[in-house]
Structure formats: C-alpha cells, structure tokens
Length: 58
Image (tube, rainbow, N blue to C red):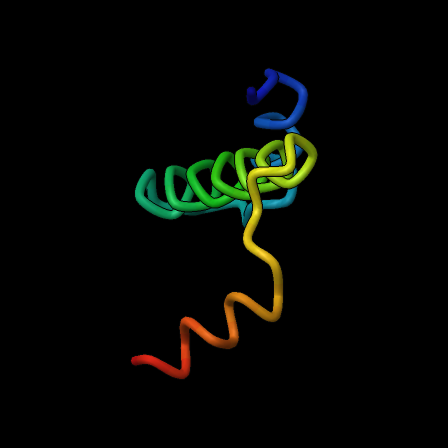
C-alpha cells in the first residue's frame, strides 16, 4: 500500500512544473511495483524458466 511519505517523495523528485497525468503515472507505477514485490514475497511470482517457456510460445 502506498503511504503519504512515498507519494511525497515522488512529488519531491518531480520537476517544478508537471502534469497531473505524469504524477498519476508515477504513482501507478510505484503501486504496481509494490504489488509485484508483495506477490513475490507471497510466492505468487512466476519462475524465470517458466516465463521463458511461456514467451517462446508467443
């Protein structure tokens, strides 16, 4: 879950002028990364070898 501190850190690293779309994009990216990290910790990730096999089928 995102915290106020994390969002403030994102804003602090943005340029002086930015669009709301840019901010939302960065927040969504951070949230997706955190969800992915949590899935890995819960053992829900996909094994690298399985991913390579799956990609070969494309």
